[in-house]
Length: 495
Image 1 (cartoon, one colour):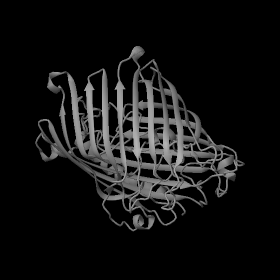
Image 2 (cartoon, helix red, strand yellow):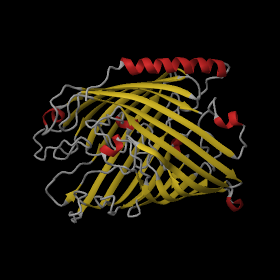
Image 3 (tube, one colour):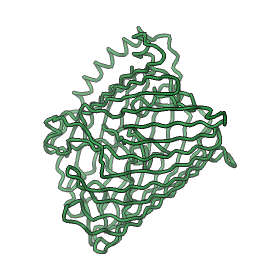
Image 4 (tube, helix red, strand yellow):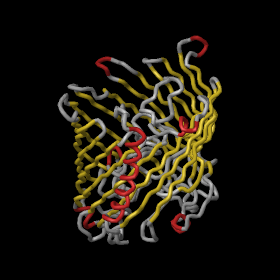
């Protein structure tokens, strides 16, 4: 599918931006632009931590709660994100030309608080406009009009006068733990993972925290591209044949300002009538050590994850052979925050995720990222999403900087090789089981920038160029196209 000229959506966006900017001048001209951290996911900016009692983000200058004069016990929020994205020169198997999409995401959140109890619901509508039969649209792009969360929670900041905080959340909910590499509330992706079950937290303030959960993943419906393009509506359902559980333990303020996390997750996946699976039965232990960035200081992060169990080669109903699964993942980075103008932060990083060395034996060594996010490490997702946390060997560098308090920008460069040249390049359908196509996937250069007009409205844009390596050019079914370019521009409006 040939992308539309970029200028048309930009003109439309510019016109809308001019209108909203004039409204912002009239409504919030006196607002001080002080932003603690950039918002990265729907309503994470408006969901205060029930135990810590602090808000990470500035309150939206335009908000429904104050405008409607609602009581303090009732919280409400509305968020709308519009993103235009275009891709030139396909990189997936048998791809031709380019693609485009207008990703719309609308989100409504409500929460009522009664003493220690909270009753909440979140409604998400995600659509993929301008997509067609050649776009490869799937349920990470669209999930129409469904409940993302519906939960009952209870929390005490000083349980039985012990000095410990305790929280229980039951029902449909999102999960966001640790580095977000294995469990995350998706940020750039148009749809968001959710789970139905129970989550418990026990917190010793400034010392340690434990989170335990037992859940069923929620399957997004419909799944067929033809139904998604026709905007057919089906309600999402919990996968009652699959259980995802785990324990996550955090330690704060250790020696030399370090913090640590130790965790163990268990996935037990089964087949159902509507959802045939690869019957993944994994144990995933991991540990992370890190120092948070601070001006004129070095910071680092080191995360090691193992994975073992069984899995089947396919999700076919006739495939009943369990393969032994053994995989691992390693992340390391070191950074430095300069105490100069624009507050630059430089990071050198490295990621390794194992691949399957021999496609013909009864063993699987491909690392599975479970329900993690990848945008913050491997570039834009959406219709691009070139790299995932499996079968990769990737060093890189990035620098982030803020020319003004309301403007953030970044430049990143990464090199990608296959950890195993006989395994696939994840998500592309490209594989050379002989290994003769080599292991060089290519290099990725990414530039991003975001301007916060105020705490209710921001605009973001990004450009990515994929310099194709040998494997991306000559592997079986690889498209004979030049290097890939991806561009997006988006607005995020929060009430």
